[in-house]
Length: 226
Image: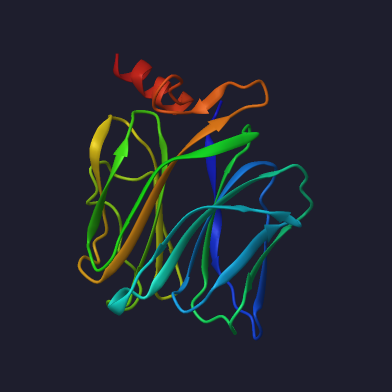
């Protein structure tokens, strides 16, 4: 099946311009979310010495001064742990939150749609049934527990939290919607970004896509409904 797995989240820190953390990930197509203060310039993210591709970046300002980045890449080998290394150009890390998802059968993927918003409780994004979607959010408003994404057009499969500010969620979209609302309960004062992907297997089969090849999870839901 062309499913993805939420691998985990963590808060990483470094006393210089390099921070390192270890996760047990596996192999496949990786989606990596990163939240850092927006005064941090991220030059690279590597996993097991594989340089991840920066797919989308949204920079908050004012009261929501966080940078939200989405990366992806293909992991071909896996040891006991996979070292995640984040490098910046201008100083030590403070709030640095990472969120990791893996398509174990995926061998490549492309960014499909993306959007971000600053000082807002919600954004909209164009989605199709079967799309895998991932969202990041950061907020200075209050302390943990962080907000959640349950007020979105469809409830997420997972709500994830890290540190004092970092939040994330993931979906397999059920219904096509040109203005899908990604909403966070922290409301105004939140910076939010969301992305969707098309992911392929080794044979070229589309594992996840809202157009020509709907996801396995979406097909199963349809069988259960009908």
